[in-house]
Image (tube, rainbow, N blue to C red; front, side):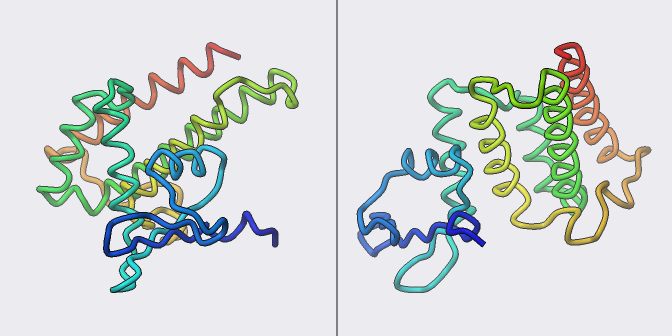
Length: 183
């Protein structure tokens, strides 16, 4: 396997500075976001404790993009995510998000294939990397691959949780529809 297949190790020092172990230099959150957009996996470890801080920093990158006006997440989706942390839907949400992003990526690949396969769409790879970073941050490594399935199990569409999931499903269906129109 190539060097890009293993995560880029970033160490956080007590001063909160982030150190790229491959290039032996300090990096910023923007640098880390750039690595991810380029398709690179990153792992951020606290040097003193050995704790994995990757999720915390990925969420911080997303929050900074959102605060700069680069709004990718509609408010109703953010509300649904907050609700999922405060009720029992949280056990289904990570798997649902993973399956949804996989469906979205599959749709993108089909659009690319229908456009000639080798044709590059500006920003598509960056968007895919951002999606994966978001997904990793939200699922914490949990996803359908862990359970051997590609769809969430056990959702009860008659409950309030099911209604929240239905809203997300509707939004994803609209996105898929827009992708289909592109082809």
